[in-house]
Image (tube, rainbow, N blue to C red; front, side, top):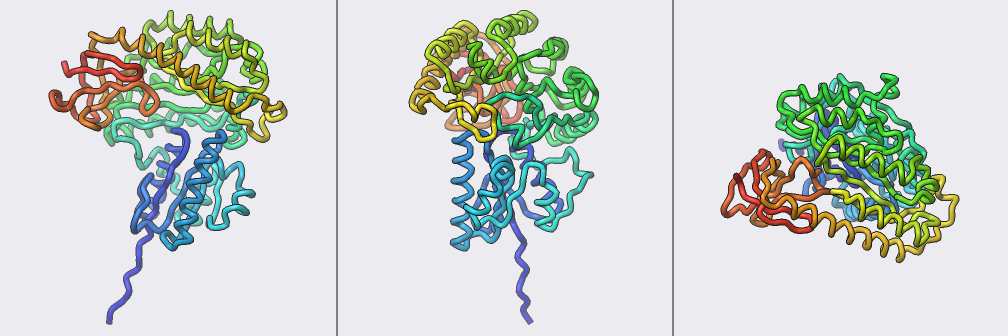
Length: 436
């Protein structure tokens, strides 16, 4: 007698938003995998009957992308293409009640800290012994490492504490264990991420312990680069810069979102720093680590930002010549302190200022890149694409910064390996070179 085969559930996890969300998805996928599921990341196709969307809720555009993505899979469910649809992450944390009413096709919504409940819904027990284990969705030679969760800062424009809660550091021992497991998989570059990196350790060790963490991580065999993301500028602990100087594995790179340069706007943003103090900090960092690559983020169109405030920001950008910079337009977020202010800058003007500022940065990047022509750099190669091997120097983070392109017809490198590359030409955001 023939018996009907039991179909095995297959899950697609779709990740939106920042690298912190990427790590959350990777942790979730490893738990699901150990629970017996066939799991894949950021792909959905034939045979995948369950979809989990890990959402972003940071600003309007991110929220719109998240809602559109959920609706795409809700339509797929209505069409019988998938059986179950679950939603987690920041948008779900913040707007769960509204989303349940507006998108009833979703089987369940989960917040940012509800992984055990999500797993239980899928009949999987959360395994504490898997701490540090992840399903890597990045190329195998680099990985993001979330050293803490949440944020204690009170920036008036930011909704992150509403979605992620207060700052919670992970113990050094746990992070070192994770680094060893990642290195065993072939990871060579660790990208340390947190909402506020400089706060690391204050809650569990009663002092800032990022320098000690860097020392311990650098002892892990196989790890060659350690990169630092998202450091708050006010009361910045210079011991971090000393740690960069003292440790050859820590990249000469620091991502420090400044947000603005006008004292009026900085005060309204509750950034606890002035233009003069910011300048002094940047000069000190560059003096201690000559050649360090500084990445920053600017926010334009904050309520009350005048033409004079914006000119101040432009002048500051032109003078400071940041190696890398991203620009966002202000998003009026409910329940933040800034939401009480009138969102009085037209969206068209916000976009105009953002484009103008990025145009300035494009020129700065081109100028700095031209100075690298003729020099040789150690490059880590991420992928092969369109006839080129594409990699990065220690001065660049994946996906957001400049890249080095090497012609695959006349050069050969292995993706995931380092190679010494002599730069032969430069564009605004790309360098071209040959293998030495």
